[in-house]
Length: 255
Length: 325
Ligand SMILES: Cc1cc2nc3c(=O)[nH]c(=O)nc-3n(C[C@H](O)[C@H](O)[C@H](O)COP(=O)(O)OP(=O)(O)OC[C@H]3O[C@@H](n4cnc5c(N)ncnc54)[C@H](O)[C@@H]3O)c2cc1C
Ligand SMILES: Nc1ncnc2c1ncn2[C@@H]1O[C@H](COP(=O)(O)O)[C@@H](O)[C@H]1O
Image (cartoon, rainbow over all chains, first blue to last red; front, side):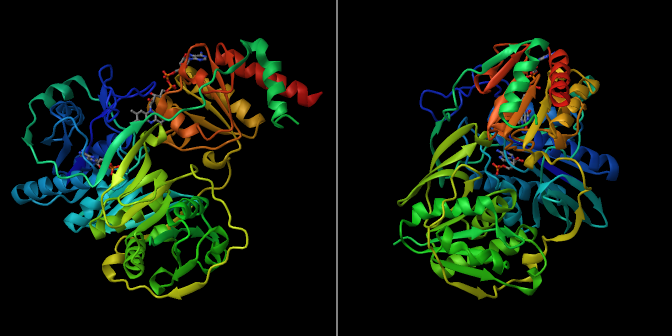
C-alpha cells in the first residue's frame, strides 16, 4: 500500500511567546523547530503500516527551505521519500495550504499511483486551523475523519477509533481515505543513528507553488495577558505540609 | 441586515455548553437581527433555545440520523448546515469550538469553498468580518479578516460566557433535510462504552499532576497517594508520556486533555506554554517545584519550593493526621 503523512514545521516554543516587531509572526531567532505531536504520530503510523503491509511511505510538507529538516526527521524513523513544497517565510492560510497539497498529491499519484491512506495531524501546532484534512479530502473526493486515536487497515478499509465522552466511537472508511490523528495514537520511536544516516540519502522532490490571496487574512498576533502574578509561597520542603493542608481546607477538600 | 445561523450541538436533550457560548457570541454579531439555530434531531434540546437568544429554531430530522449523535455523521451534519445557510441566506455561520463542532464547520466551509476561522474569542461585526482566534491552543491570539460573503467560524470553548435572555422564546420548526449516500459514508458504525471507574481527567474537580521532576514510573507513587486522598484524577506533562511513565490519556495540555478543575496541583512541571494551554481553566493552581524561578511560578496561585518526593508524602501524612484527629 502507499501511505502519505503531511507535516508542518513550527517553532518549538516553550517559554513566553515573543513576537516580531510587526506582530505578524513569532520571533524564532532563539528557537528550535519541530512538528506537532499529532503529526509525529501520523508519521509513526505511516511507517508502521508499511512495515506491516509493505509498500511505500511518503512525507509531504509546505514550508520554508529549512523545513527539509523536519522531512529528514521523518525519513530518519523510516519514511521512504519526501515532497517539499517550498515557500517563503510567511504563513499560508489553511485554504491555500490544502489547495497546494492537493495539487502536489495529484501530481505524485499520476506518477506513482494512488495513496491508499493520507494521514494528517488533527490540528497544526501553531495555526490550529482544524481544517486542512477535510479540505484536502474534499478536493480529492475521498472520505475524511478527524480526531482519531486508533487505526487498523484491513480488507480495503480503515477502522478508526475516536475518544468521546463515555467511550469510543468507531468509523469504517473505504480506502482511499484521509485520517486526521491525535497524539496518543501510538508512541513514536526515536530516530536511530543509522536511521539518520540513511535519511540523508533519501530523495526529496522540491517545487515552489505560488501563494494565493489569503481569504483568512492574518492581521496581527497578540500575546494574551495572563494573570501575571507571583505565586504565594506556602513554604519550603516537607515542613510546608500544614500550610498546604490549611489551604486545601480553605477549598473544602479536607473534611 | 445580517442573518446569523448557529449550529447547536446537543446530547440527550441538552444543548452543549460550548454551543450556548456560540449562541452568545452570535448574538453580538446579529445585534438584534434574526438569529437562527440549527439542532440536529434533538427536539428536547431545541425547546429552550429562545432563552439563550435564538429567534428561530430549526430541527433537522432524518431517518438515517435517528440514532446517531451530530458529530457521528460529520459530512451529513455539514451538508444540513450549509443547505440551511443557503436557504436562509446566512451571512455568518457559527458553531461550537469542540472536536465535532470544528470538523463539521470545516466541512461546511470546504463544501462551499469558503474560508473557516476555528476557535474565535471575539467577532467584530462588519463586512468583512474581523475575528480574534486562538493559535497554539490559546497561548497566542490572532486577529484575522475573513474575506468572504459568508463568514464561517466556531467559538473557542469557554472563552465567551453563555448568557440567557430572560423571557426569550423562539418558534421551533422541524424539517427533513436532503441527504445522499455520499454524505453518510463517514459515520459512526459502532460505539464502545468506556470501562467504568476512575475519575475522568476532563471533568475532575481536583487534578494532581506530575512532570519530568517525578523522575520515573515509581516516582508517581506519592502523586497517586495524594490523588487518592483528594479523590482527584491523575495528570502529567508530555515529558512524562514520551518517557512512557504514564499513558497519553493522562497528559494535560495543548495536545492532551484540557482540564477545568477547582484545584490543579502540578508537581515537577516547569509550566511550558503547551502544558499551561491545558490547565489555565483551573480555578487555583498549586505548583510544587525545586526551582523557585520555574515559569509555572508566575501562573500558579500557590507554590511550595523543594523536592516533590519529600513534599508530597508529607502533605499526604498531614492530611491523614488532620482527618483522623
Ligand atoms: C506543539 C507542541 C505541543 C505540546 N503539547 C504538550 C502537552 O499537551 N502537554 C505538555 O505537558 N507538554 C506539551 N508539549 C511539551 C512542552 O513544551 C514541554 O516540553 C513539557 O510540558 C515539559 O514537561 P515538564 O514540565 O514535565 O518537564 P521540564 O520542562 O523538564 O520541567 C521539569 C520541572 O521539574 C522540576 N523538578 C525536577 N526535579 C524535581 C523534584 N525532585 N522536585 C520538584 N521539582 C522538580 C524542574 O525544576 C522543572 O521545572 C508540547 C510541545 C509542543 C512543541
Ligand atoms: N504547511 C503544511 N504542510 C503540510 N501539512 C500541513 C501544513 N499545514 C497543515 N498541514 C496538515 O494539516 C493538519 C491540520 O492543520 P490545520 O488545519 O492548520 O489545523 C496538520 O496537522 C498537518 O498534518
